[in-house]
Length: 362
Figure 1: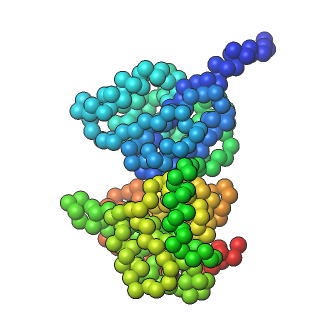
Figure 2: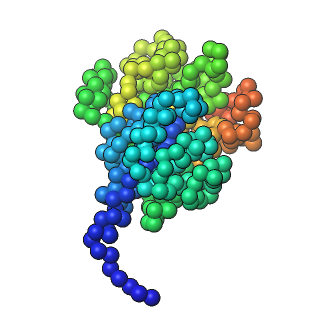
Figure 3: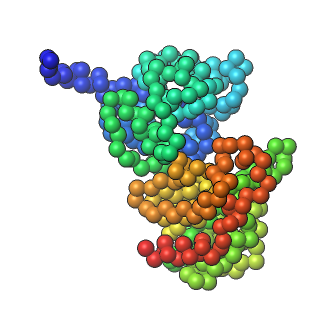
């Protein structure tokens, strides 16, 4: 076997790849792709890293200094021949001459789009997108999404260890959060609550919210924790969830703020970082809290815990999951037919309060 040392030029070429990561999903899904960004940046510091995501998730990545270029799609499901947005994006991507694209999506509609980018290599997971990939690995269903993404990254030629999720913000976001928190007494503890009932369903009907927890239990939890710890509270959510939060806080006289719809994603990251704890259903704020190092309690129901739970390398995450025989159902037809989310209703106030007090003492 002939051994030789790579020249500096050859080493630079290995470290200067143009790499595009494609994750076009909700905030929590996209956040779980940021460890792959960090791993590639660490292993290939001179690489040019681009990220293609959904229009909604763009703010999540806009202050991430490990990403060199951000691209977004607003109308994800519109066919290519009807979408000027996708046509313009394709023309731009062809000029970039990507060496490697990591496709972190399983839907062939995205695979057929990125195939038009004419990259040297496209890496993804075995499945419906196989015909569009130059190399692939199996997605391990018993492993977390983050672990699977990092394993896929090893197709670059290096094995990656653990990396945390990453969310950054600018000074303006920090100043706004400081102003918000001045409205609460500066006393311990400060607890964030994310009830997260979500938007209306089709034709304006309210979705069942299979991941939701009853409003009265959130209210009772807040009352109990204030009585036993003296806590003040913020309630997070989208603008559509403002009225839900109002129904939770109605009649309560101690310090709390309903901030639903009043923060951007970066501002929410900084806000949660300043909290002593977040109590949340399985939703994107839970992943954001894990990313910024806020102690976290997640009320878990229909989703696959091993695959999708919030992951933190530097703060405690407590999952309350009743593990009923009908769950997880989130990727099965049972979810769409569920009319009584007993997986969530079996979670009781007492165990949430007990877990919260215990976590505050650690």
